[in-house]
Image (cartoon, rainbow, N blue to C red; front, side, top):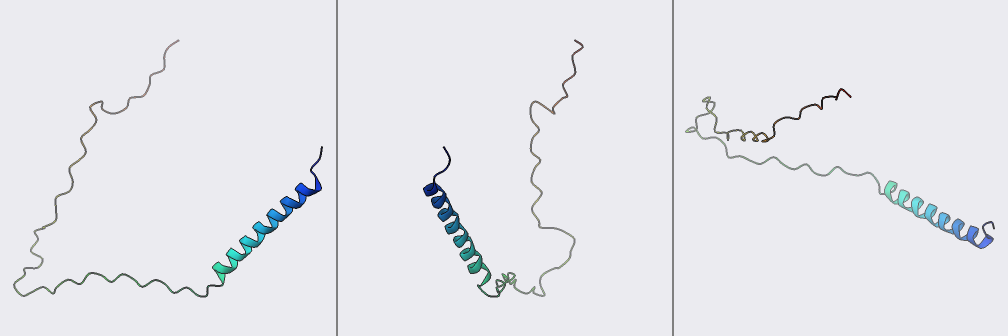
Amino acid sequence: MGPTNKAYNEVKAILGKLDRSIDDARKRRLDTGPRTPSTPVPAPVLPPASQDTLLGNGSSNAAPPPAMRPSSIFGRAQPIRPTGN
């Protein structure tokens, strides 16, 4: 038995509604006008260095790099050797 005329009309109505909602969403997205870029986040303001501050002395106050992750107790993976059967 083929599709009935009622089922065809229901599917056609659903697809028409879907097309209209897609067109409305596209219109809202495109008709909002030119978008202004968001204001950039200002860089943090640091207090000016005083005359008492030693600049560029070669030493670094940076934190040491994080420790290496310990290797697995099983070691690296080994390839499976083919059997001679």
